[in-house]
Every structure is written in structure tokens, then in C-alpha cells.
Image (cartoon, rainbow, N blue to C red):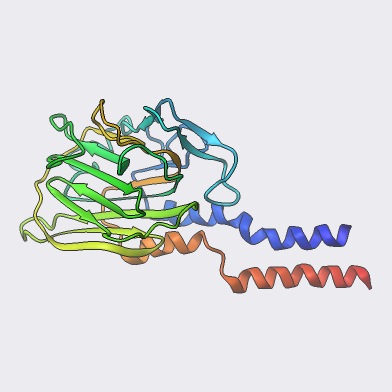
Length: 277
């Protein structure tokens, strides 16, 4: 029995390293805010989340083995708000998460029963904007659809994967990046799923605006039926454009290499063999 338990424990080490490895990569990319969602706090020292009906620290079915929990959203009026930290990092004109440059990434598990064909995951807006649909002026909003597609509405631009890119009934890693390229008129917006580009434009023209509220789980419109049901984990936000290499590194950090798993398993088997001798 001791031999069997030793083998199992050694083999499990690859999985247990997932959360620590992913955190190390994301934190090393210097996010403005990083909500690991095992609690309400911002790992970078900013303000805590404000919850409306959803929960954090859900203890089963984590995105990453070894995680302390994630945020769960019910099929109702539930969301979480991230106001930014006390120094205004997320909303400051100079350093905040604005339309000029930015990125965010997270893991999500969509159970496919959220209301509406479009389920909002995260959105930000200016004080005057109030809609995730229509023109979307002055707002950034990421979404998934019940057909497995993913996309983002950015100011007056919509960018969608066009085909199913999300793995059903599983955790998926999503990242969204943009760069207004001030003065050139050729803004770039990119959508990533599980480390790969699924939609991109390099000729976008969008306004410069600063944003004073961040919400995920439901769009900003109070009466909207577009709400997310499922789980979200490891939400991170940047005021710069992540490179494809950086996004890929996040996803790769959460997927143990087969060779590593094999070596650990072989190590466990070697211990079993030695004990039997």
C-alpha cells in the first residue's frame, strides 16, 4: 500500500504544480490587477472585488490543480465588480486600463446555459456608456456565445472568432489584447483561446477613452439578460499589450508537458520497484 501511495503521490506532483507555475508566469508579466479568486483580494495590492450574488473560493472543479478556488456565477443577476486600487491604477488616465493599450486573461468554464446567445464575461465602460450591445461606444466587453465562439466588442468594433473555438464542458483559457497605435489609425485587437489566436484585426480605428468601472459575469445594462453562468478563475488585467509569446506562456504553464509527467511517473515506479526489492 505504501508503494502504491508513493507512486500516486509522485505522479500527482505535475498536476499540483499547475497553479504555482501559472501564477509565477502571470505575476512575472506585471499585471495591474490579478484576482486569483480563491478570495476577494487583488494579488497586486489593489481593491477587493465587490460581489453581487456570485461567490469566490468555490472549492471543487478548479481550472488549475492546486488552486485555492474560483468564482462561480449562477444563472441569475450575478456579477463581480473590480473598482481598481486606491491609487487609481486601473482607472487612471496615465496608467489605467484604457483603450490605448491593454490586455486581460482568465480561465472560464461555461456550462452552456447562460441566458442569451451572448454571455458577458468582462466589460468596462466610461461614465457615459451603458450598453454592451449596439455600437458599444466607450466600452470594452468580452463575451462567449452558446455556439462555442468567443469575441470582444471594443468601442464601435466587434471582433468574433466566427467558428466554435471553446472546448465544451471544460476550462478554457482566454486572453484579449489591444493597441490603439496612436497616430497611425491602425489599431490592433486580438482574441486568444487556449494559447492560440482565434480572431485578430490590424486595421481597427477606435476612439481613445478612459474607463471608470470594471465588471465580469454580466454586462453593464441593468435589465440585460446576457449573463454568464459557470466559473471564472485567475483573472488578470494589464495596461499594456501582451505579446503572443506571453499569452502562449500562460497557457503552457498550466499544461504539464507529457515528458515531465512521464519522468515523474517513472520516478514513482522506481520507488515502488526499490521498495519491493
